[in-house]
Figure 1 (cartoon, rainbow, N blue to C red):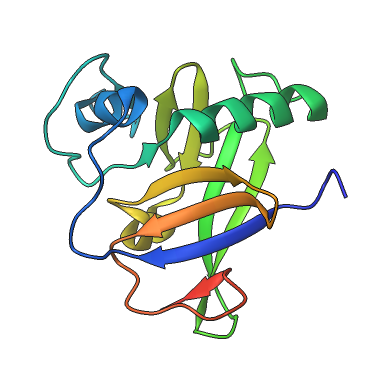
Figure 2: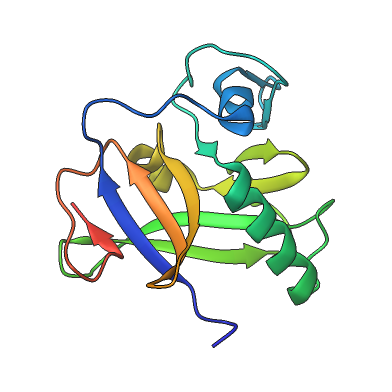
Length: 158
């Protein structure tokens, strides 16, 4: 059961909760010219520039899972993606990768790198990745303002 990850999509409800420390850091991003690399600026509170937000709980969980899987934080990271299929038409994809691909957008949150390919970015920009651990469930939540609906399985959306 340690390798199981639940993913849930939550369409935006019009307003987000006030950002926490890592969410605020993810708001202000800078891109290296011609590289696709995006870094979170500490303490910035500006628009997301179509980027991603990752909560502190999610960063901690990603870091622990990377260590368990032997993925180097300096070279590897978490790959977020979208693929066709699922109950609602599209499904989230989440896995570790040893290095970014040539055209990936690379986000960094407190030493954890997130890779997003260009096609998936169309669906994931503005999204917040959170991690929830309760008595009822544990897993990552994709809070995606681009999602118009999701199904009961929690891993697909449209």
